[in-house]
Image (spheres, rainbow, N blue to C red):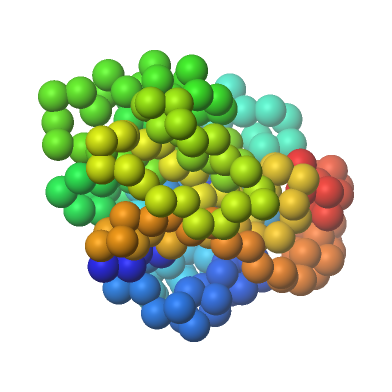
Length: 243
């Protein structure tokens, strides 16, 4: 089975459309989203509508939780909080209910699980190998070998044996049968690894490989819409820099 893995769409309609178009050419058996459909960018309803139209299983991200009213956004930075408050008013009631019903985790298959931040909390950041190993206890005693996560907006792959680290020059990684992994496909809507292209991944459950992919999109159009909506200018600039 080939599974498309997407995360952190962040209401970026242009990036989401580009990634879905790329996935349409690949034709995976299914696509799974690791949360944060909303936040940062100006098209929350349109992006939620796309995810719902394609029937993509989705976990709840921290921005999603705030935008739909499950959590209070008091702990967000100023720019992110302003967008959340704006999107809270813009989000349709049906989309609000749908977001509020998204789960904390999704099983890809018997060996794989998808979360937003970490297996323990959607607000946790897994930035490096040590962070990943601290979360390994949440896989212990289960049949899980792979945990797919988002939230950091940076592609990453961490193995419990320490034999793999993400290298942007390498696109396909062979997953070893005696190892466990934490894998982040990167962000669709706001990359932070100094590559402004939208990111996604492909998990082949038969070959046991994970492929990191990038796709160009019209980030200038997204930036213009951010400014026209009266959202913080810094968010438009951030898209161009990929950071």
